[in-house]
Amino acid sequence: MKTLAPFLLLLAACRAAPPPGDWASVTVYGDAPRLETWRAFAVEGAHVHAAAPGAACLSEALDRTSTSLPERFPAGLGKGLCESMQGKAHGGPGRLVLLLLPPGDDPAEALAVDVPRLAPEETERTFTDARVELERPAGKPGASIDRGRVTVRRLSASRYDVEVFAVLKGGTQVVVRAEAGGTR
Image 1 (cartoon, one colour):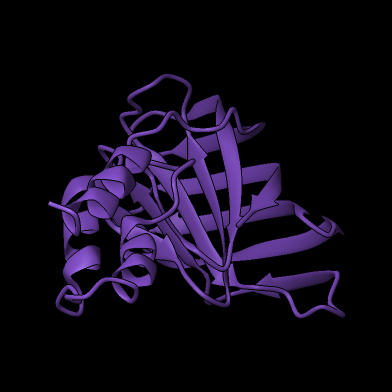
Image 2 (spheres, rainbow, N blue to C red):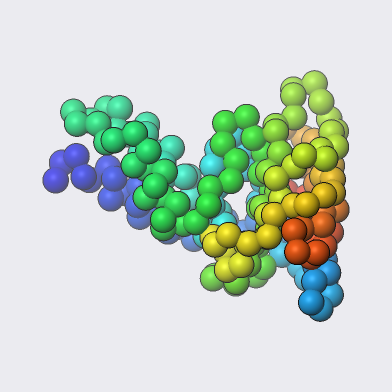
């Protein structure tokens, strides 16, 4: 039970309420055009899940905790558990993720924009190879990018302005302009 306690604490943290996030305009051209206001979260250098935007990724926390335990958990256990509970992980070391969620406690969809982190000397960069995914329901696989671009501007040490113009596989188009603070 002693070695299980840290794991249970981490598990509880994954279900913590998300931070408030910044508001962003999201336009989705699919079956019916929509212009909506969603919450935007920027996460640097860590994994994030649409189902738990405010919590640290369980797999990373479990890996850090398991190194101090007498019996190590098998490699990949944390990632497998986390993805089975929270859905796909976006980002990771060296990555910046803009996660957008509609208002409400249990969103029906999510948009994840995953790009490499800007170098310290960079203030702006446009990516044509960004990972952009619209998840429906949040945490479940949805449509990924077919073509488009993502422009990231660093506003301060931990704030970004992100523009997304993407055509997803299946023809859905997504246009986003968001300003969000980075966390890690």
